[in-house]
Image 1 (cartoon, rainbow, N blue to C red):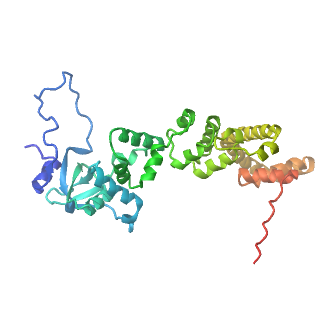
Image 2: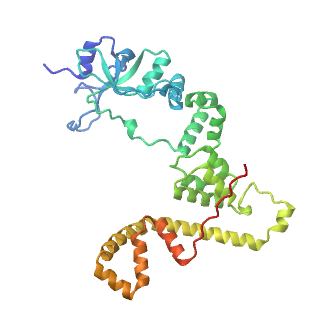
Image 3: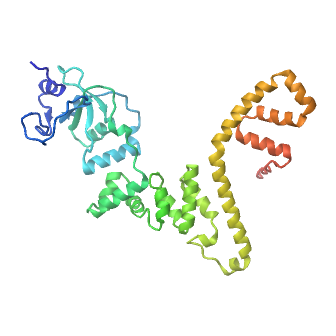
Length: 356
């Protein structure tokens, strides 16, 4: 007699647990199929092939739910999504003792709370064969902002109303409109650089005030520094030359006050700053590694009294540089100490205390 599977034992222990799609998986070897040679099944499935409807009151949580989770935005979005379009991903459960009617909930604790709030008494579940609490959604990257935009636009094209999308996402209608119009006025090159990034729709709102070439430069700077934020975009907009902005309307006074030579000079300085920033970012890792290696070597070298005495007598200037490297904690401190030694570093002026 062949041993029963976990799912079969669960059915015997809990008669009201029923498969959702009985017979959907072929088990008869004589059943017609593709005319291809069969390979031996040398992999172990993590779940039973059937999906079962299981009462929620038989599910025991495997972890403690934090206090106040039901008031979080994430939980409210889960409730809105289930209310509008239903449960998308089945719960993951396991039954350690087939003789009992209880199941251990491996994944889906928030969904269970949301289902109970909505008055649902049972849910589709996948019965796992081990309890390592691994599910595929734990290893899926979140949708990028642009991918989310395409998804919403596709849903709109297929007849889904904006109001229903807003309820499903748990946001207001204006937020959906901002996501729909996310890429309006953004050049293709800038879109390509933001394709797999996450950012708020307000970032592209700021970028629309720049012309295409400046949009690409601004996006490259934000991506390079890994700070794709509204504050960074707004700072870049303020540093953008007037002729590279779409929202700039110079007055007669501005036209008389801003000679073309100053504008050209500012453009060159901005280009030099951007080039220096990229070079510094590319070389920072190797420079830091060289500093660490040099610091360790010089520490041992100056620990030798004979060597230190010789350098002190013959090359005192080199000794100062060696001690500077040994006493350095970070790259920023090394640059600051070097500027102080050259007399080029100035302390920032202290702000005056406000009058009481």
